[in-house]
View (cartoon, rainbow, N blue to C red):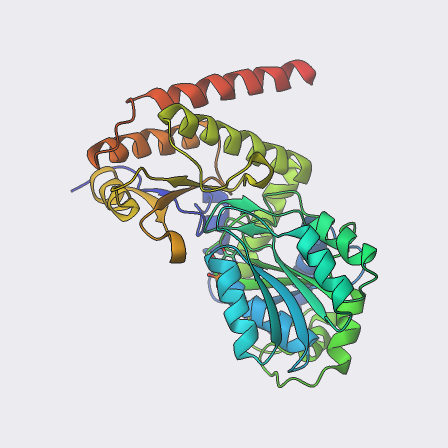
Length: 394
Ligand code: PLP
């Protein structure tokens, strides 16, 4: 029998804090109770603060991030609409696939896995083809640990005179990384509950601008479960058009309270500090990141390239069975070539040091010649210096 905690360092689902777990432990409730709006209306209002959305609406569906992708497409676009997408990792690849299956005419730019959305190429494509109806951006490509510059994409769209919708996958960024839906002119932002929100999977979230809401009224694509109209009509009065997952709603209340208690700017700063410490650790091992340049580094997930011949899946297996620690494996094109350390949600310096310690042992056991303790020591040095500097500045 193995005693002690099993450690979760996959980039979602993330560890659910005790306070959130307790909030979800409720006797089942009537989802049409007269006082349900007291909970729901506040949740919807408070989610805007996380999306940084003043205009438009946040919609919540029982579902996962993939459901939110589908909701975005089927509500805001018509079959045959031309859309611009970049494929640079497993999740951007899956979104392209979904868009094609749902009948969109996808102009797909393939980019090396490890790079982000090619803003200049997008600008040229938009100038050359004014018929493009939407631009899709995967803000944080969880498969490669790459964060793209959403604000720059909006600027490129404006420079090209495009009036396309900007649709952003923020599944592994919203609630952890800097995200500003209004300021960046994002029309549809998609998130899920199991990453920065520190909840189990089960809530699909969308931030929808006024422009996208108007588009949803015009479009004719078949939609039913994910139809905005019915959801909005029910939400207006604090209910859902079908049975919501009540424990998750209570959990969301607790997780939002926690995020606000820390402060959204501090949440972003913490993720930056933690991500930088993990990167310092990887550097000390002498290993490369999948992200090819610091401009792409993700503060929620680090994908580490393995030296030739070592299978990333073996590192994950050893970590899981021997050290009771879950890391993410490589997906799609980088399967076997990387392993991923998730550092988002309910994480701090010491938990990230634990992740690095477990990774060092698993790497050594898998035959990667890293120096035991080197990554942990580098991250410790970084965290100590960063926290001291913060204290002095306060
Ligand atoms: N988009 C990104 C960037 C993701 O990381 C994920 C899942 O990890 C998804 C979409 C799919 O979300 P879900 O698994 O919640 O359907």
